[in-house]
Length: 270
Image 1: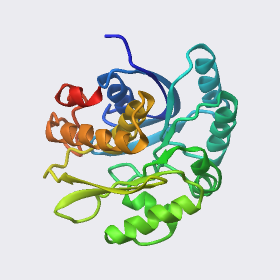
Image 2: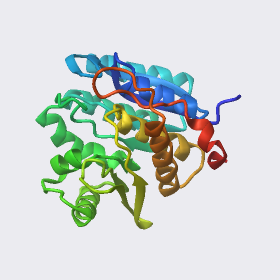
Image 3: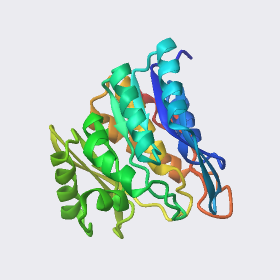
């Protein structure tokens, strides 16, 4: 099968394979596209938590991006873990040079086990400069609260947070509602084309490691193949839900989801 598109992933590595660049590559590949990567940090972790984070020098992150793109130009970019102000600035420099229009930003801040993955100065630069460059930003509830400064308790708060992020310069926002104690999972999209609420069944499982990384990469893949940003969100959410439902039950903590489930929604991709 020939790849349908090419995705550049800028993110951290997860040694357990469930999240980060490993989850991104699996997602892009499972959905029929080709993944290029620029690794921003190496995390030593398993399903029970993060032991340590080893940052990659910011100049080498930029070199990975520029050198790869000079040879193989991607159709879209997915950005994940950016752990420092210097790294974000180098990524911004890279984006201005390579000029790829389709950018999905997943503002990774905290690992599933609670470990902090970004510092305060980096958050400020992300809010001020990087959000404006993205076609879509995909924070979960805790990340949206950090970025907006408001407490999110319900659907109305989620919509308000989306609008605050748009006022900060975001073009489109998808806030993931998995952290709210609701019967179903409600993900809310706000953009130029209006508001859309995606309602999904909530599965009782602790095996949800890497869902955020996976969703943003799935959206980037669908978007790169010509779907609208709203439709790409819908298809990405369906892919993640199927991956949660069929999770392989690996590990003693928050286990990974099943990225090899794309056959279930293959027809939706056309």
